[in-house]
Image 1 (cartoon, rainbow, N blue to C red):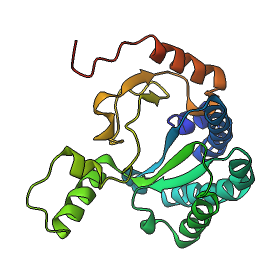
Image 2: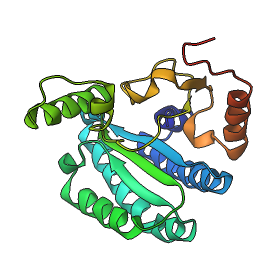
Image 3: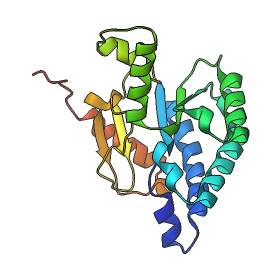
Image 4: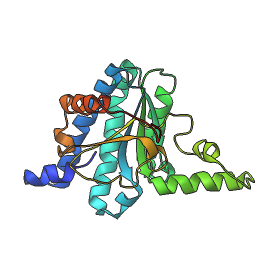
Length: 216
């Protein structure tokens, strides 16, 4: 969900206003995906590298996260959405961590779309976490199935489609293992301007592609 800061800068506003605008887009896209019958939606909300940002921006992001979770719980229940967090969420500030935990628990029995929020998440960190878990269990040799079963997304299908907003042409340490055969779609649209029409454009583009997974 890239481009919040640039969206704000273009309007002469501080970056936090861009993040707040981005939350409105989150609400729209989450509900649209749930309505389309998409099984899993993962949003890259806060990376392990984002701790390098100014303290004021980080504090603002955590406040926005808490507000989002409180305000959207009713909508998640209405739309039968199950929330899950991936990443080292224990390192989040206590208030944000508790709000997240409460929302995850409140929605855990919902049976509709699974919404993953990637928080304090890094793809390399995730793989290291999985390997260390296997070593702690006494594993001497691993295979792809064992590693996949110890990722934060264990039990979930790999993504079919990665949508990258704001024109950035890189994966940025996101789901490095899971994206091995995912289709990539890059749009110059900044995240706060990303609409349901943009989402449909991405899905239509995906539907035209032939996925061979290395075969013929």
